[in-house]
Image (cartoon, rainbow, N blue to C red; front, side, top):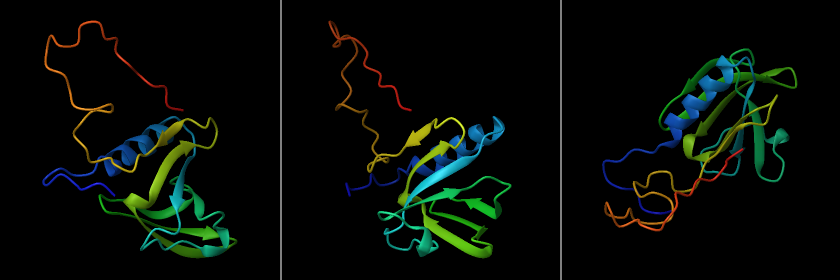
Length: 137
């Protein structure tokens, strides 16, 4: 994992909370893709496939949902049994709407202050270059 910039917090928990709110506000069901093998991830192992687990984190499916800066925690029923789930935020690989598939995949390095593609150019030094945006589904 790339070194963290001192004093710069990860964008992941903020983006995760924003996407969760956006999906919920649009009457859709937020789901997380989690790396179940990440150190500290406490998830029901019988539902893990290929080292990952999909978690329904809607308000209707969870109790006590807490989306903190370091941890994600909630209680939910899995196969009729209530379980406590606790996952490091860095183990969350993405969030999406079950109904539309729209969401966000997180990169490994979400603490960088450098824009994708390298260091920013100085003003007036971008002649001949077109802005480059990438569609994320």
